[in-house]
Image 1 (cartoon, rainbow, N blue to C red):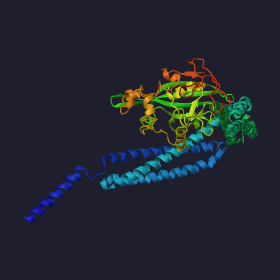
Image 2 (spheres, rainbow, N blue to C red):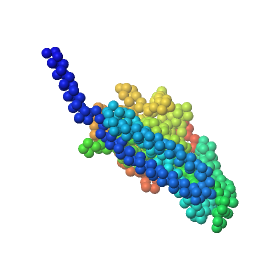
Image 3 (cartoon, rainbow, N blue to C red):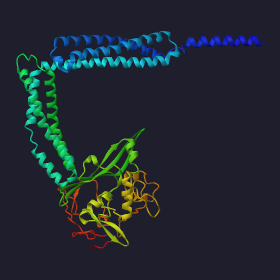
Length: 515
């Protein structure tokens, strides 16, 4: 019985091996064999095209020896073709190995075949790309010679535009801006010097090819240095395009210094359509443009709009409702904006050691110091704090500055329950934004403010503007505390405010007592 059992097992194993072989389970994967066959044809076509390109470029070199002496192409091109052909030959060698593996059709050769196929494709593509690059370069130089009169006219036009450039206006503008923002003087001078270098450098370039320009104007430009002429034309053309672009860029940068702005996240929304999701943020942009830096006169506008964002951006900002997700101070470029989210309005407050700035001052009262906004900034304050400004103490301000200096977002801490004060989870935010789309969609479902007003309106700390509801959705300008108008209004705080005195004109102190 034992012998019969062994005979049965042997027959069974033999049968299984035969089944495996006939089922193709020991073959190379079908798709890999197909790729090898297709690549064999692609390589053959690439080799034919390579030879055709090489022959065409060789004919061009022989027909235009003076032209192709530029960049030493008469020797560089043959050497480049030689190296590319070496790579192509290696690809053909690897393809021969692949053909043998494909014919043997053994599954154990799969990894080797896949690796060789990847290498061969890279070698073939590199050789073809190098040949195509040389053909394009040769044709570019042939086109340059064929259109030489047109090239010379363009060169002269570019030179004349640079020679006639008037930089007086931008120079005067930079000088005015440097007086207003002396900390930007070095950078502005560097940028202006770059502009001023274009006409001077273009003159040098133009004069350096004067002999070549004379030869190019001749009927038979024998001995013409095409390379020098081509390089000069490219340099002048690039400079002629760069000068106005760089001038406009400098003009825009100087203008940015006179603006401060905040981008405040005032709402969040996810729209669902079947399985898809659209993520939206509502951004309030508050921009203040200084019209007189010395007198600190300016004009502020605001508007709100929904923007669609990707999921990652939405999730990154979902915790920052009510925060300024970007802030730029006057005297800085837009590229220098602080992108670390922070409580809206905090960036306008002066350090306690400074006591005051153009927006307000620290007032000592009831054993502590609190930030007071000047009356002419009441509307700016209400825009930043959503008509719900709560007195900020020096301690909280110092915590904010310490957190910001570490590149982190300050969310504060509510002294009553230890919860965050700002951001989506903040008690102050949930009070201020209880009517937002985010809140109505259940965003504050775990907060007491989901159903309870919980604001400071009616308290002795509220300002008159905080006791009325205003539509914040349309652009507005302010400066006097009056309702905004389409023409805008300007504001002008005192030049040197006393630390503990509000200016005349309706400034209010905390607690409802007029100063």
